[in-house]
Length: 240
Image (cartoon, rainbow, N blue to C red):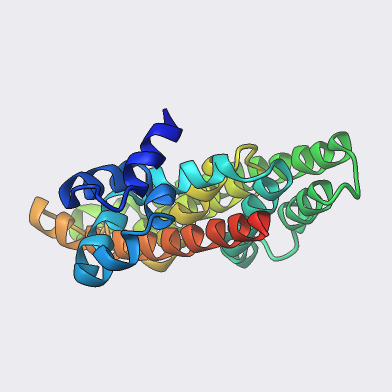
């Protein structure tokens, strides 16, 4: 089926609207086609919109196309970008970082899968402990503050802590993720969540929530764009 699609989209006589329709689901075949430079020069904004609308699926497809070792290297790259979020809250806990380093070593055949999984298990234990400790501290803070809740608006500091906690957990999930595409999504969630922490929680109406959602989505899209470019770098290396 992919061969047929490639033949259709690679045809210099492919109708313009048909090319754009196929490009949405088959970006790599589109970028390799002779019409790509012409049509994207003619309508650059249309390709940008196509990318924005389909980036999640495109990255998943790209990650699945990578060679096995490059899938692990790509996942390590994504998780590493989220790692500072976790380490800012847990500076003495290096287990997630060690798991990412081990994943790279496994991808390069420097350690066995069993050795890599041992690092993942250690990182998972660390993040689970951090989760319970953070939740306990958050509950204690909310309890101590409860007596004054009736006299003033909700404590935004606590709300920000909840948002940051979600970002920290997403970063930890990226560090211990198995499949590259899921690791990439968790990392994007973490980076975007940390960059805009508290914005969604501060919304007190539907309109305010929609308005607050914009910076989160923009930050997440920026991170996903980086991931999309990174997968293409790996694929170009594999093709040479």
